[in-house]
Length: 158
Image (cartoon, rainbow, N blue to C red; front, side, top):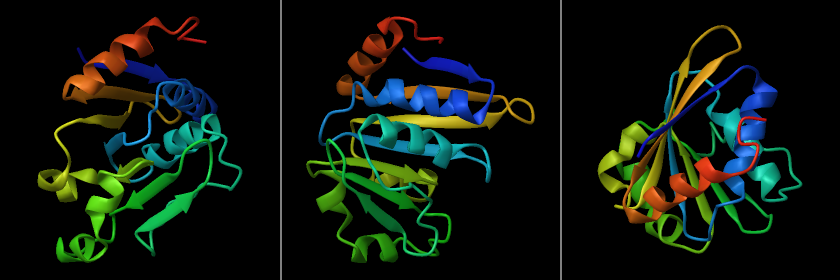
């Protein structure tokens, strides 16, 4: 079951992130897809706030990965500037992807073949200047259950 949500503002996108964070477990991986400026970092900021990350979450465009402490560790990858797959291999990506934190990856299409079987694909598209269409696509059993639970959250649309 895929789940598609339309958010009407950056604040709305961050609220959705907070709701997603309620279901995050250590070891989860969220793979983000979307054009530049679509709202990937905005949604990750909401997820991070929901996980009680105190730092200001920004895209690690020049360092590839940022690490944030919250209820669980958040490993935030931004692969926009990744020029070849060896760069991610050299980082020891398996420790992050199969570790005990939450891994979020912007521009995940650049390493699709390295993603674990169980992950949540999040595809964000422009609907209008402020509105976004956010499609949550489960990959594997863990995220099929995750989306069923997310759809049940009381006042989901608030």
